[in-house]
Image: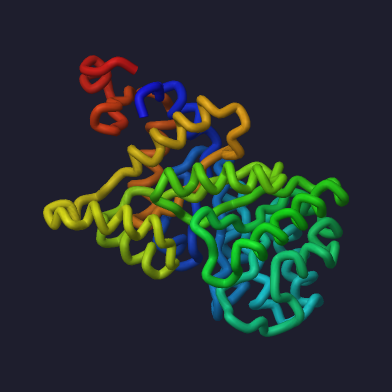
Length: 308
């Protein structure tokens, strides 16, 4: 890293989205206290949870002036009728215009859908006016499917989008390792991927919290990155901002015109308020970058100390 500028960072941060679970949303008095109107907010549908909770949060987000993107987990749906009803309610009650279609975390499907492709092939998303659809991406691989399977699925989704005239994009699991992300983007481009990438990145949280979520998700290279940092016990409970990751990605996007990363998607493990405050400030552009320290600096005093 050495050529990245404050402008590159701000450009990468434009239009960022965030993730919430129904449980986390219940702790937020008003999303408008933290996010700009129209911000895209994904709403999870976790294994063994109730889809009613996802619908309720999506409806609330629309009412508060945001763009809800509900997760639709294939393996948690008992039948096509349930998918049809769910999509109908999301469009009618929450004004949903886009969704994230995922397989979901269950080992065995409860119904006929084992993958996002099974759901997409029904045509029900289009039937309900949902033509902008996210599909899962795995910069560090997946424990559920090998690389050949990932390649076949990704190319199927590229063909499907082209044939149906749909606006599909890839939304990834969170990742902490810029080298793994960059290598993955180049690899899937070599396969023939043309779907834009909404890259999942961590929000502000302690190293201890980040390690917990990384271990739960089994993201290998990222765990190694975090473990090296966690050897400094004094930093284990300090809140970390993803400065180096953002700087490396901003530089990559600036220097590679074929970079597939379109925008960033934040997972606010440490709480929405901290992550949103930081992300809003970076996106607003009142920053400088210190490439020697891999740091993003805020405010006039900081900006006067380094060139941007």
